[in-house]
Length: 237
Image 1 (cartoon, rainbow, N blue to C red):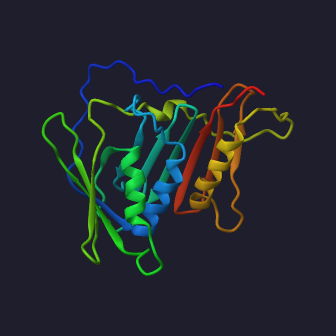
Image 2: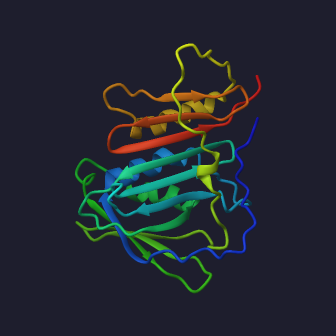
Image 3: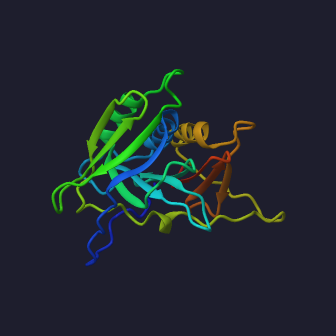
C-alpha cells in the first residue's frame, strides 16, 4: 500500500509561537462531532509524535473568507482536512495547536453531548507553557462553568505540510474513462464517519476524484456549514 508523504521536512526556521488566550467559541455538539469525524484518520503511533494527534487551526474572518476551525489528521495512509464555519460572534483568533490523539479520545468522552447541552457554547483557551514546552488547551462550558484541559503536542514536533499531499480538485470530462482502483474497505467505512458530519443532510453524497490507479483518491463533501477533504492512498489487490 502506498503511503502519504508525512515525514517532516528539514528546516532551520523555528516554529512560531501560537496565539494565547481565548481562541474561539462554538457549540458543544459541533466540536464533538468535528473531532469524532477526523479521529478515524489520526495516527495512534506514539513513536511518530508529529502525526499522533489532531492539528487544530483557527482562522479568523477576512474580506476573502469566513472564520473557520480547521482540523487535520493523518495516519500515513489517509488524511482528513475538515473546515467548520465559526459563529460570527465567536471572536476567533488566528492560531495553530496540535492535540495528542489520546487526549482527543479523552476529550470526546468529556464533551459527549446530550440533547439538553448540545448547543452549550464551549470556549477554547490556550494557556502557554514554559519556553519550548507544551501549552495547555482548556475547553470551558460557558453555561455551567465546567471545564477540561489537555497538554498540546511538544512544539518540537511539527505536523507535516498537509496541503502538499491533497490532490487538486478537478471535474471529470465526459469522454474520460473511469479508472479501476483498489481501496481498503475499512478506510471506506471510516469515511462514513466523516460524511455523517460534513456531507449534505439531504442526500449524504460525496465526490471522489481518481487520477490513476496508483494516485491518492480525493473525497470531497460539504453541507454548507462544514467542508471536508479526505485523501485515501490506493492499495494493490
